[in-house]
Image (cartoon, rainbow, N blue to C red):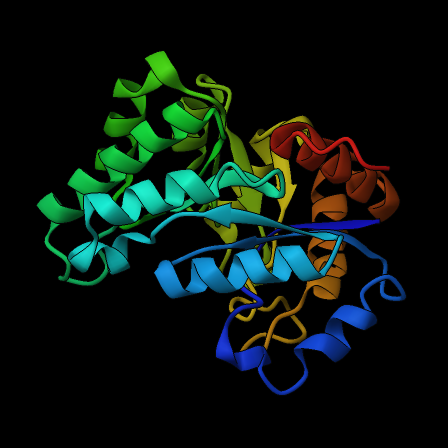
Length: 257
């Protein structure tokens, strides 16, 4: 009963055994995956995966670190491809100030444009925000008038920041980092965030949970995140997985059983 709401199976880390992994997903309890675009090539691969595998859905967007060469023609291509019924979100989009390039002005320009794209398509957004808490929040507050729904992917900010996003009805993507020994700030935020606003994600191949930290992540490892979340929320792991499944289907508007 796993819904991995944020994966990157297009990544070269899966080139050697991607199809074998997919064929074992059902056996491992994985029912749905949203594969998330990060650049134009990744978006093309994501669309192909969603076309080939019924349980995979696509999110289309350009990661802030990849916006340096982005053009309006690229945005129009994303808009056209977003008409595909298996495309369920615009993402991942946002701001990443960890690296000096692209310039913050460039990142903000294309974040704003992709927010507008979400408004044009009516699709929810998957937001990447790294070392950019203030600017991300300000831009999303300014976008409220045409908000279609959103999730803060790999949420890593404080409980106070979580309150700001809850006030705007955002969801929170929670993954392997929750299991790390140094995740005190995230644990405090997750204690505060209600269960009906939590989506489980891997960000695979990255951010594998304990006991696989540092190794290649995969969707079945969400079980470890769910177990940690169950301990924090005083629920069973099955209750956490069932709630996260409902949340994900609601957020991505997937009616399949």
